[in-house]
Structure formats: structure tokens, C-alpha cells
Image 1 (cartoon, rainbow, N blue to C red):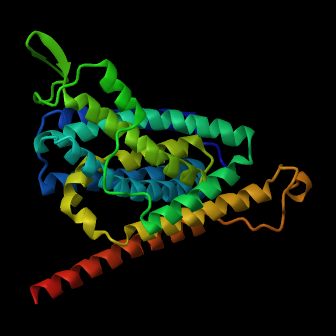
Image 2 (tube, one colour; image 1 turned 120 degrees about the vertical axis):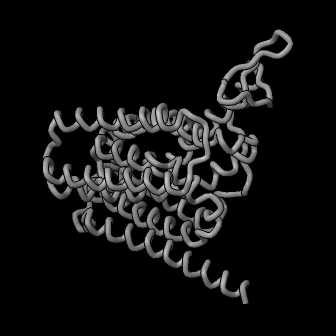
Image 3 (cartoon, rainbow, N blue to C red; image 1 turned 30 degrees about the vertical axis):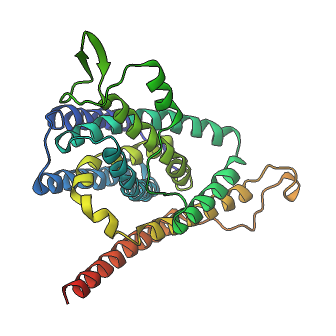
Length: 328
């Protein structure tokens, strides 16, 4: 596989930093409820940016790198859409004012990106040293796919994780919002507003989802740069997607099925790769199994597009039919 030029890597990272700074701290700093037009414009821009980036990657590193990026980006983006269900619950649970939700999502996503970066580095270190880790990743994705299709991974409620529970014990946190301020004073006592907790709730909850998505993308590419950029482009524009989909999220009834098929496919692919490069002594005497086929990355891309696109289309058809029945 061709090496991605260092200059291209550095340039890409600098551009992505600019994207995030502008999106989060210039456009998103002013509390407001984005219009449908604003949401569509931002989403279209970031989707186009991802497509252009993939094309540039094709030019500097070859078709395989580009196909790996597109496959990873589509998978991460689809899983991010699924994450929005939980973000809606978090916003409701903490009664976040509507005009603050875009800013809250932006900061929470920035926190998630930093944590995901650390998780990706840990994943790269593991797969480089222990090839058998793909067995664990593969079976975990199969388990996740089963839970997703059966609905066992969602109970409709948000439960605070250990970090936030510990935070509440050692810090003064009020239930009162004060615009976009993190702290306020009441009776001479300084309190943190709920914004701090919401930032951490969204950021850390997204990382919990990364336990599904990061192993999934490692099943599509082993290049840490492609893994990271796929995650970044999937998170860019997620704020606008949150507002654009809004009440439509519950209409994407078949999306979990499409995602579960994708995760199951990648899980099987990881297990096959683990068998092909096996080093475990109790499997084939510690030797790789050459008879196990290697699934090309372009096949993965086709499976992802068909499953995600098909589930979205089926959801829209079902929604229209349900609307027609209610109108009748």
C-alpha cells in the first residue's frame, strides 16, 4: 500500500483544525437555532469536503487508500447518525435550552474528537503488537450487531456514567443555566452550570459509541491517518445534522438493521483477517490459514452503501406509507 506523503498529512490536519475552529468557535459560538437552510448548507459543504479529500487521497496515495477512506467515512457517519438518538435524550434529560444546543453539541463533539484520537492511537498500538486482537474486535462487532438489531443496546433513557457521577460529588453544580456561561454566583457561592456536565456527557457518551465504531473502521483500514480523518469528517457537520433530522430520527426505523448488517459484515471480515494472519498456538498450530479468502476493500464499500442506503430508502418508504394511511 502506497505511503501517504507527510506534507499531505500535515496539510490535512491543519485544514481540519481550521474547520473545527471555525465551525465550533466562530459560527457555532453564538447561541442560536440553525435554520433548515443553514443546516443543509453546512452538511453539503462537509460532505463535499469529504468527497474532495477522498479524491485528493486517491491522487497522492492511490485508489486503495481512497476507497478505504470512503468506506470508513460512510460507516462512521452512519454510526454517528445513530448516536444522535442518544444526544436527543441527553439534551432532554438536562433540559438544555434549544438555542444553546448547537453550541453544546459543538463543544461535546470537540471533547469526543480528542478522546477518540487517544482511543485510535491505543488501537493502532494493539493491532500492531497483537494481531489476535482482531478476533476480539470481530466477535465484539458481531455482538454489537445482534444487540442493535434486537434493540437491546437502547432502553430510551440516559444513564450518567461514572465520570459524571464522580464530578457531581466533588463540585458544586447547579441545575440553573446562565446563557453559555460555565459558572455563576449565587449567594456568594460559585457554582458550575449544567453546561459542564452536558459537555462531558456528550463527549464521553460518544466515546462509548467509539467502542463500536473504532473496531469497525479498523476492519476497513489499518492506516491511523485514514482512521482519524474518517472520524473527523464524520463528526464535522454533526451539529447541523442533529437539528436537520430532529423529529425525523424516529422515522429512520430500518437504520439500525442496516447498521447491524454492516457491523456484522465487518466483524466477519476482521475474524477472517485474524485467521489469515493467525499466531495463536491453539489455532492451526499457530500458523495463518491461507485458504481464508481476503475480502477486497471495494466489496466492503459496496456492502456499506447498499445496506445504509437501502435501510434509509426503506425507512422513507415506510414513513410515507404510514403518513398516507393516517391521512386516509
